[in-house]
Length: 254
Ligand code: FPP
Image (cartoon, rainbow, N blue to C red; front, top):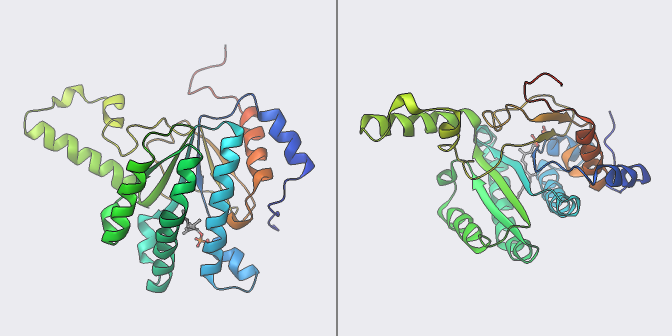
């Protein structure tokens, strides 16, 4: 199916108004389709990732306008390390560029940055930039932007299990007291609310190891748009679709 352009359509504006009253607190996005976008434009894959980074910027601004408080973006999965070395270099280079050039502006807009995932797999200068970006924006609360980097949901759950097992072995934790709330507190997302809405672009319909624990009751939305084309109209459409969903969290309607 053809990807839509990023321009806000009149329909998008109507949807933006309709959804304004009930924004989800936390929107998480699987940004997929950069490679296909590049191929469709006869460009190298890196051009798709660059256009994807611009879509990140647009999406942060749009989320703020919609009153969304938390946004989490799947920017680099733990499986992405298996891509060809040149593409990994392009992606880490883009991340470095993003951290060096955009954090000041994000800070000015009231955005607080967080990162989840195995950050130690990145080069030391990036690891330092990540820590600096978190510290530098820690006083902000207008929008909480989390980038999932070298992130995998199963690895995150296994790491939490190791933490709990270690504490139990050392006598600091009674295994009988482990429940869903306390286990959530051991995940990298401990300080974050669960996502209300997970969007995946590009037409693929799977979670690909993203926020597996946290997505238990998330609404899922799969959009037929390649990530670099994702714009304000698509975000508005997602907000309107979310507002139409009836969330029951497993309970029966009254
Ligand atoms: C999926 O497209 C996207 C990624 C693997 C990386 C996402 C990265 C960005 C949006 C740009 C960098 C972001 C920041 C924050 C600096 P794909 O390559 O799998 O596309 P395909 O499925 O069409 O091949």
